[in-house]
Length: 375
Ligand code: GMT
Image 1 (tube, rainbow, N blue to C red):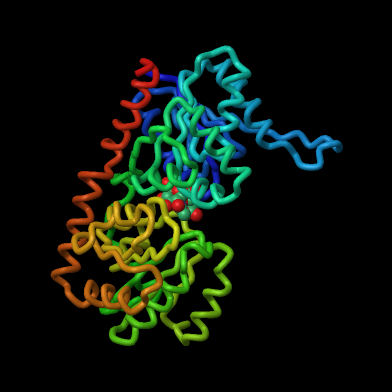
Image 2 (image 1 turned 30 degrees about the vertical axis):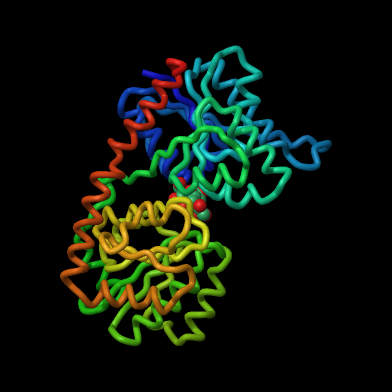
């Protein structure tokens, strides 16, 4: 069994979810897990034997114009590596976590192995800034092993950073013990959803890249032909513009803004179709969550989305911004009960066969073993 440090962004977001769930699963297997982060990761919501949390505290002396968080993180990592005798430090996100981990390794006297997992926005957004590009490349090249959450992200990283560093694809996973279809008739009633309403759902952080307005426009087209409701889950910078668009399109009666929600499996359980129409998406963890709850999806032909949705099998892949095509696919799924049922079943099967926790966990464990054996 290994002693593994994990660093991630602890707030809501797919990368934080994956890092925390991975830590919990590794701990269940008997590994000793040490989270090093600025606050308790939000999914670490009870006491777990074998899991420890080390908080990064940033000193704020008057001479510091900006509190040096990255240095505080590196110092904390070095402290935890030495004191807890870590074998591995697994960081999620290159910036700044991989760079801090490398600095920490240089500061301490253990041959701790650094594993960096790329989640997407760090490469696709930060990689555009040339000063940060050099730093991300440094973090990747100095890590002992690097993984990315889709093949598309591997290719994009190599293209953008001009690196030949070998990067393994390890897909994201979803815990089928938590994500499965539940009977939520009561919830439907609570939201005023009738049994003959088609229910569409979108879950995101409402950043511009998520193109929530395309979701709303697609919904407007669908609702012209059948009774339907749209659940919008999450919050972020585009939230008020989305409200305005719903008003402009006169959809207030049928669009439910639910804000941030913890138990999305309950909302997915009352949904018939999931939309993720982003212009940047390395994977799309919310798609997996939907699939596990038997919800077919429509996604854009962007990043890792086509690696998650099998076109024609578990949903459809559409062109970015092509509302006509997206609505056509949406109506096709929602009007054809047999097709819907077949896609829902296939979605659950794919989760079970390709993205199950056990499968992905064993890939990470194999990687840890290789790196510890210097393979
Ligand atoms: O999508 C976001 O804005 C959040 C971001 C994150 O840091 O959690 O998500 C990224 O990592 C997720 C987990 O691996 C992926 O499922 C998302 O596709 C990825 N987001 C982007 O690439 C835009």
